[in-house]
Length: 409
Image (cartoon, rainbow, N blue to C red):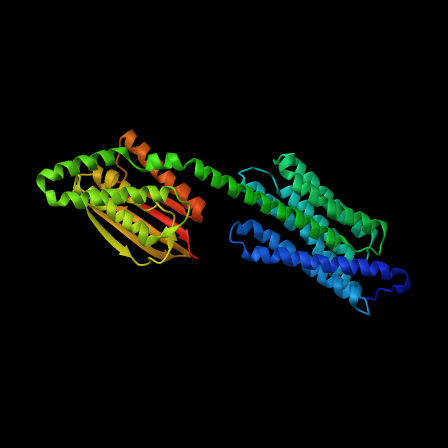
């Protein structure tokens, strides 16, 4: 197992140069993908399998470089390189399984994973026994032919699997080359090219989805505007300001200015895609609270516990939740009169909570349910598209808790 590999340098020197060159290229390409992976913050579970695969390729290429550049060439270096390469296919299978599960497809992956691991064990056994060339090349060929069969039999369409199939051609070609000419050692390069094709195809698909999401966001902008600016609230505000002119003339001008500022911020927020400071969103919330306070409805108290304020969030994410708490929380309850707004950090997230002590799980009218669901779905959409945030609504026995979660950093 640890015997030296005897070679005639006068015959194999050109092949050695090819092997060495391709190994260096592979290491460079793997390093490039590795840098991109480290900078990425999404799809960490799926990209984790890519990271493991790239690490195995780099380990194999390192052993191969030692084999190609050392004066004394030991079989153990070649064996370790082959074993690293053999483990890449099962890891790649796990990556593919993750892409299937993300799209909600039910696919029996256990069989394919078991086959790939068994072939990897076979490659490792032949490498330990020193059977290089045809037999290991045949094992690698079978490994990636199985991969193509797996792709074609999965729930993905041929078009969706095309990048996977094209990428598989490289390790298959490298395996055939090793079976044909024993001194060719390009399996590592072939597997690297597979990862290059699949990884950058994934990047292109991700960019396409981002552009599509931005287009959808633009298309929804007008409907969001109409849905978020509740017509009844505008009508009621204007009517109440008109009544206020008979009761307290001095309070009319501040009320009109407040109403104008509220509408202006509403339009500015819905016609822009950028994040805004939390303090700016809170100013919008305060304007709404002042307007809601002059309407002839039940009086309420707003408590604030803002432990963190130095962050940004999508516009019109907090104000609609406060509006729901006032309109459909305490507004539909004869007992509740308190709304609490909190902001704090926990578990790597910035959390903003709006808690009321209103109706909670009590039944609401269908129109109220419909409007409230539209508002919360709009908030969910903006959070997801603009900052990968989340919104959760929890019904309590006495009141409702709405919570926004935004990743820190």
